[in-house]
Every structure is written in structure tokens, then in C-alpha cells.
Length: 154
Image 1 (cartoon, rainbow, N blue to C red):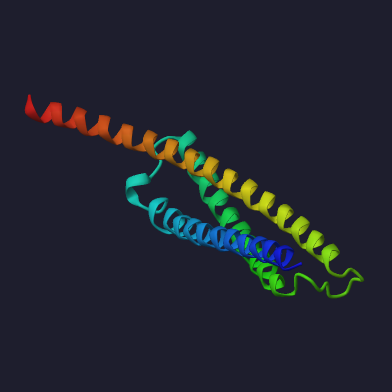
Image 2 (spheres, rainbow, N blue to C red):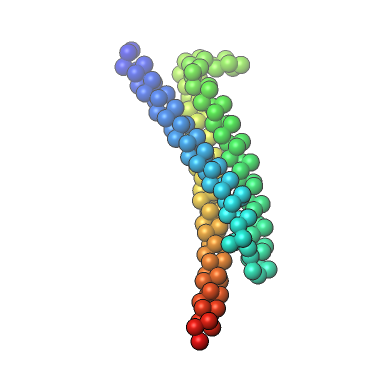
């Protein structure tokens, strides 16, 4: 019987560690989002120079704002889920006990893990869009600089 308890204990520990990992990554994502929204997109270096880039800029600002809200909601859900870990063998408000509670908690953990993974993939896709936007701006600025430089040395 003790071996089963240790296996359950280990699983709970693994779940808690994965939750800590999600929270750490989400805190870093929030840090990046704040930098992107407050510093990068508002930098004079990243002013759009065409209507298409202006629209992309506005789209990215809105997307980063939405991502910020979604990440904060996800963080709260993950923290609430983590707080339930202490009562994994007792389900408040339901009639399950023991193994049933364990299964319910693990199922909710699986759902939350999938939500986290979907969010992370969407954020990475958004970041890729931002990098593509930044590269277009930088390429234009580099070409403009080279043109001015060539004219100045003639």
C-alpha cells in the first residue's frame, strides 16, 4: 500500500512542478508582451512607413493587448488549479472520494495543460508576426540609410 501512496505523491509532485513551469513561462511572456507593447511598438524606430505596415502595427498592438489579458486569465486559472493540489483526495462540493478525485483533478490538469499549450503556440505565432514586421521596418531603414550614405559620398 505504501508504494501506491508514493506513486500518487510523485504524480502530485510532477503536476506541481509542471504548474510552476507554466507560471514561470507565462511571467516571462508577460514581461515580453509589456516590452513589445510599451517599448518596441511605441519606439520611433518601428514607425510604419506604408499603409500596409501601419495596419500591421495596429493589428499587432491589439493582438498584444489581447494576449496580455488572456495570459493574466490563464495565470489566475493555473494558480487556482495549483491551490487545489493540497486537497487532491477530497473534492469539495462533489461526492467523489479518493481515486475519483484524483482522476477529476488530473482531467482538469490535462484540460488546463492543453489551454496553456494553445496559448503558448498562439503567442509564438504572434511573436513571429512581430519579428516579420520588425524585419520589414529594419530592411527599409537599412536601405534608406544606404541610399543616403551613397549620395553623401558622391
